[in-house]
Image (tube, rainbow, N blue to C red; front, top):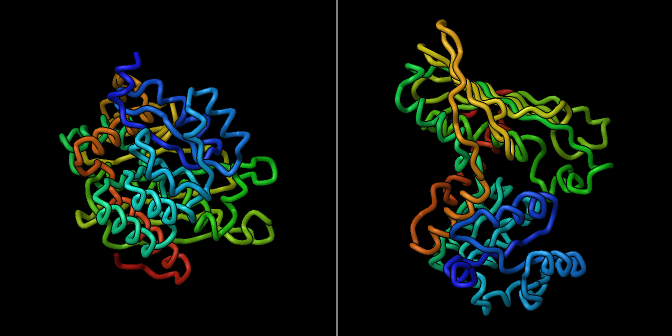
Length: 344
């Protein structure tokens, strides 16, 4: 078993929050090319406990202060950044300067300048940069893309996509930073609306040319003093397709997308769940639910990053993909603020 593990590339996880500990770390067990070898945390006790749980050597535990010394650790090939959005740029640059490949959570950063800085740092270091758009490694989404490309829906005319969940900073520690503008960069759009935005782009295989948007946030609610709650936005694509999307921090959990063609429609509901997905195709002749094997999108994503690092090839979701979404998110905010369409 040891010799098999040695062939896998080593990953350091930066940030041991709920998503890292409950979703990412447990799924290394299903990876063929990636293994967990180091932890970076501001909580020594938590890191030590998790290291013992996952068989990570104590010398492979880092703080944010001594993080740069990771450059001397041959057990670490890739650094996976799972920190609040506002810290992504700093740790991507530091990881690249330490000679490590970088996998970074979405959104890539909170400004275009930071995204560009991240891309430049990794290029200068000769290291790969990948943004963790897990849905693009998930079997139901990949099946939907293939059906649309094959023309099963006919000519695509419209898309709808909705993502919402209640944010509860008073109850959930993991939500505290999400309502802090400096750390989050924005509210529901940055956090979960990005799934709708990114899905429209990869399902259609086109880039929007214009956005419009409306925001509705109750500023008397302490959760929304700095960040937005509800945003409805529309994307216009060169082919004439219009995508209508919503994101919210105040309604019950939803993560769905529907693509309308002139021959049929396709539903992904949920579109971006962790473990359970459904896909339906319908027309005037009725509905079908194709049999698709549920897969481990986390392991697939980690293995893809490892393969790209090993072979020095550009990932399916590189830094440039993350930059495109951040540009669009900022354009949506501008459209909501001004009440005017924004050309992108």
